[in-house]
Length: 276
Image (cartoon, rainbow, N blue to C red; front, side):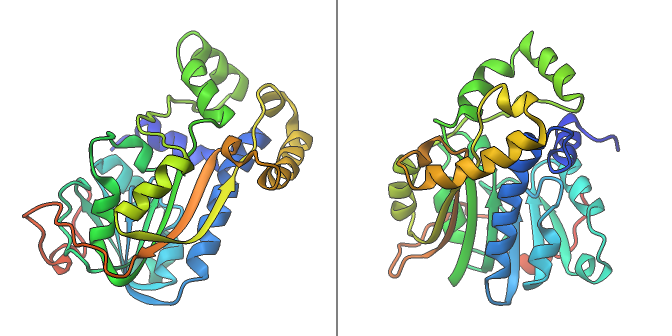
């Protein structure tokens, strides 16, 4: 099976030739891995939209059993081939399904990861309610999504169109694809929705400073300066301009139940389905 452009893109993000691009994605990866490592061991973990699989071994270090759920078989194949730890690979299963009707038992997930997926799902889909429904009563959701006022998102709406997209590919000399972001919500708007979905915030961070041209042509020095700037923006009322909002969430006490589909079944039936 040939890799899709998106799979190629995901593999390059963390090893990009461009230091700023590398910093932006590694900062998020660093935060997610730290958040997962800080959690206690659990029975079952699930990643929704595993991408290139960068977090599956981190989840396997915290859970007896890990599931990776994605609607695209190419993404599941890329995630499967990312596993290098043999012991971890034995505990990871792959499920081809849509979040709107996942073949998983409601309330059966102890650790749920949803990183950079929310923004790809149409706004009318109750994503947060779906995620909350999957969590066990003491379960934890690690969740990240971009912010709309970040220069990355604002300029992306312009730059990811021809002819600028072709120019970007020549500048970066590596895969560049439109983000496909159709549901980017600010922290100010998102946090009340988290509460409505029955989720409470345990930890919360903003990451990723970016300035155009400096990020493209400033090299390693620019990446280090942007990392320094990120810290300063946290404390100067400029957090909304940082690219990624990151949350550790748990079910709020007394949260109402939500049944996203009538076809939910025991997750035990899907411990190792083929990605096809």
